[in-house]
Image (cartoon, rainbow, N blue to C red; front, side, top):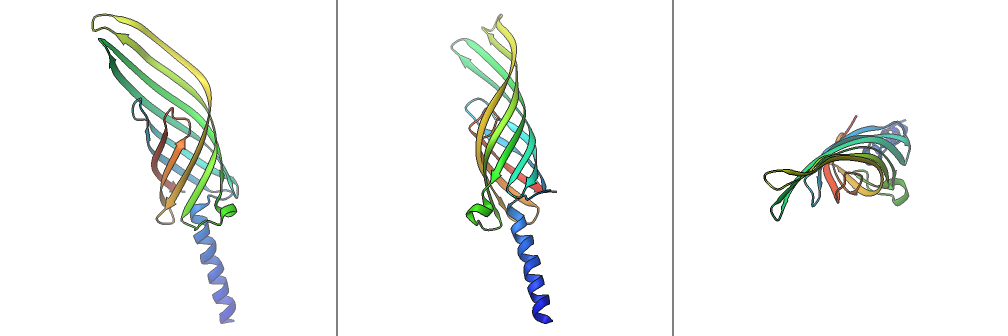
Length: 171
């Protein structure tokens, strides 16, 4: 009887440990952080929902503002991105330790550009807005330092940046 109880406890602890990195079907998590880019510092917030043991989907919102001087002209731009991503998580395939989560996927987003302005100090030379649909690839990873909290790093991902880093909280 002791062996059966011990085996049950081991199975339970192992399943909890392996649930840390992989989101799993029905899992939910929130992500937030900042991006790195040559054109301002994007900030983002998003969520992931596990639809399969190794697949997640979720919305993401990001924003950045950028200003620069070129010669005597001043340029300002703000960008808001509403996107939706899908990721494949490699934990099971690569037999990764439970605190790690590696993934890759696609992001489909709608981009709103606004307050685009060339200004010579006296007059606005151009003022406009724009928007459009974009598709982006991403690859990333997370490290969970406990059952709920982790840090993430992603390259690509629909923020019009080179990537992002931040925190993850499992619900």
